[in-house]
Amino acid sequence: MLNCPKISDIKNKTVLVRVDFNVPLKLVSGKAGTNTAVWRVADAQRILAALETINFLIDHEAKVVLMSHLGRPKGVVNRDFSLAPVAKYLKNNLDLPIKFINDCVGEKVEEAVKNTENGQILLLENLRFYQAEKKNQANFAKKLVKDTGAEVFINEAFSACHRAHASVVGVAKLLPNFAGFSLMQEIKNFKRALENIKRPFVLVMGGAKISDKVATLKNLADLADIVLLGGGIANAFLRAGGIETHQSFVGSEAAVELAKEILQAHATQRVVFESDGKDRKNLPLPKIILPIDVLAAKNKAVKNQDQVEKIGLLRDVADTDNDRNLQYLDLGPETLKLYSYILSQAKTIVWNGPIGLFENRLFARGSRQLARAIARATDNGAISLVGGGESNSVINRAGLREHFTHVSTAGGASLEFLSGQDLPGIKVLAK
Ligand code: ADP
Ligand code: MG
Image (cartoon, rainbow, N blue to C red):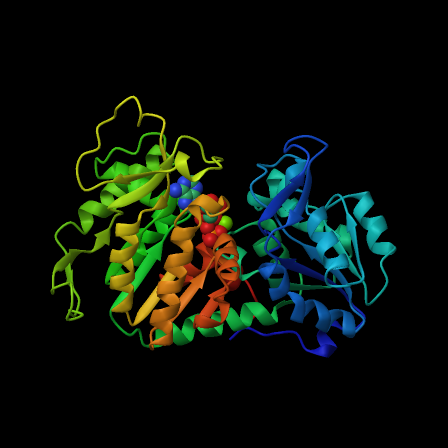
């Protein structure tokens, strides 16, 4: 079992904490990609998850150095991926004694740590402004430890534990290390659900990190009884199944190929649910279910309802001039009805990833309706494990947080954990 820090482990020490402050940001003014851009935190759930650990540390006079990634800046400095808006949130909304330094290694950091007193917090700039972070370069991990003067490491980033990156794995190898309180709680909750899976087990996957998720789905599809797809990942599967997706976001060609393999692997499996006694009989369903209708638009930033088209996918959709520019951006009402029915029969539900481009109000309804269906099933006794950065935002906006068995900060990491994989960030921690 992992260890959480005790007072004697951290008191008066400099503690380096890997948090996951990769939260959704919203542009409030200016233009993205320019100096005019002003961002603010759009959903703070991942920040709130780290508070127990952060407060424990400052209350016991530790000098707290927080480090995180944000988005995928690909190893270069990019203002749009700065953690400065997160620092602002911690200071202004949570009243924490925090300072921000616009780098994560180097002299500036050494200086800033010196100027931070015990009981205060220093937040470092985005780790992924350096390629060495993702590459898990030993030198970079050493610099993180040396430049911050860290004496203890705490991993409070369950949602980043599936990544063998320098701040997750490299640093842990160099210091006495502990599991954060939230990370520990997450693991406990997932383990409890896995001990005795109640069936039917319905897996719902959406979102945009298609390549990562298709790969995990390959393992998880064996564990689940039925898989419902939405969002970008559904687009990849629709394309893999030979269904026209026009300009929809499908990730990479490699993801589409992997989707084809998964479809083939489960092509002959059928699932039967109990009849609800009314409008549906005991019909056998394929294991992997794709949308039967979607909402589409020519541009994801459309503002008016009359620019949104409902497209049925049961029959072949001809690639007409009108359709050619369409992107599938939310699930349609028939699909939602079908998914809701299946979820009402479930005893275990795992959901990760919004099933539509919910940041645009016109494509948010599907994810909200899905969240409601899972909440209802949970109220009726099903176990529900839901999570992901953006999924948390959907859940919070829908006002349904209290209706799930466990809401995880993690998307990809929780799916890998559920599929039985050893997460590198957890494996490296002291037992
Ligand atoms: P999570 O953070 O919950 O793990 P992801 O990061 O994988 O989920 O994906 C979230 C993103 O997926 C959201 O920003 C949402 O806009 C996007 N998304 C969902 N459906 C679509 C779609 N049909 N087309 C493009 N993007 C989509
Ligand atoms: Mg995300």
